[in-house]
Each structure stands twice: as structure tokens, then as C-alpha cells.
Image (cartoon, rainbow, N blue to C red; front, side, top):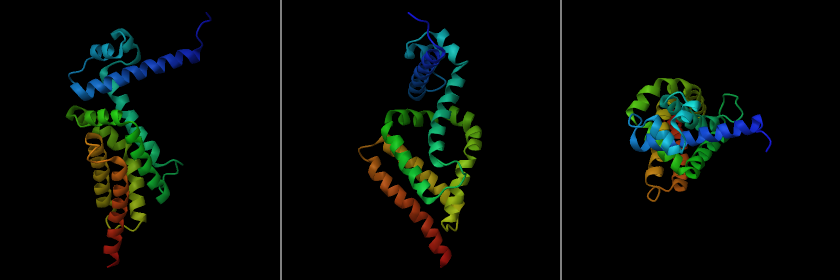
Length: 203
């Protein structure tokens, strides 16, 4: 049998990292971050504790990579041409693709949301991701303002809360809040919020 190539080793490495991250996400979400140890993560992933430490220095490193992955999945959808400016077409595409992402990977996002609402997670990472999310919110703010909103900052707050609440309801109670139906209503609602501000300004 011929020795493995560097590409094969990298593939194996990425597969092992994925196993560890998936096991950790499930345990963090179900048992809490504090109650989860590296030993339990390794056991859940079917690997040794020593091997787990070969890939991650601590469970904090695992947590940061999990949160990074979820953050960037959303962030990368917002500005596909990376020009720092949102067109209406890009904004609608972002909303549609985000809804599709949540729908197609329901279990992952259910666990992710359960993890993110834990105080220890939100407190430790809020500053980092608030800063990382600044370009995203700035683009959305500028887009809302460009559509004629009289209160783009307030509208952005309402729209952000609407999106987060929609995803949470669609994940927790999909039979009551079907995500495809919610998508239509939310996109329509977002533009009504922006346009209502424009009408008020005109009056």
C-alpha cells in the first residue's frame, strides 16, 4: 500500500475536525458549555481525548470555531460581490438564501441557536462578534437609508429582531411556523417597514 499523500492527510485532518466540532456543538447545546468536557466531546466523537487535543487546545477553541462557522455562513451571503454595498437584489437574495440555509440544515441551526443563547457564550463572545458584525450591519443600515427610511437605525433594529425571532420560531416550532410561509411574510414585512418610514417622511 502506497503512503498517504499530503492531500489525503489534510482530508483526514478536516474530517476529524468536523467530527469533533459536530460532537461538541451537540453537547454544548444539550448539556451546556460549562458541563461539557473535552473527554465527553472526544467520547461523543468516537476518538481519544489525546487526539482531540491534537486538533484543539481547549473546549474554548472549539466553541470559537463553532461560532465562527455559523457567523461566517450568514455573513458570506450578504455581500456576494464583496463591494461593501447592498443592492435591493442582493438584499432579497441574502434573505432568501438565509432562509434556505436554515431550512436545509435545521438540526445544525437548532443546536447553534441553543448554544448562542447560553449566557456564558453570549457574554464571552459578544464583544468579538459585535465588532466582526459591524460591516454587515453598516451595509444593511446604508441599504435601508438608501430606500428612503426616515429612521434607518430603528428600522435595522426591528428588522434584525424580526429575522432572529423568525428563525427561532421556525426552528423550534416548524409545524406552527413553516419557514417557507414565514419567508414570504418576513421579506414583505421588511420592505413595508422601510417604506412606511419613507411615507411618514413624505407627509
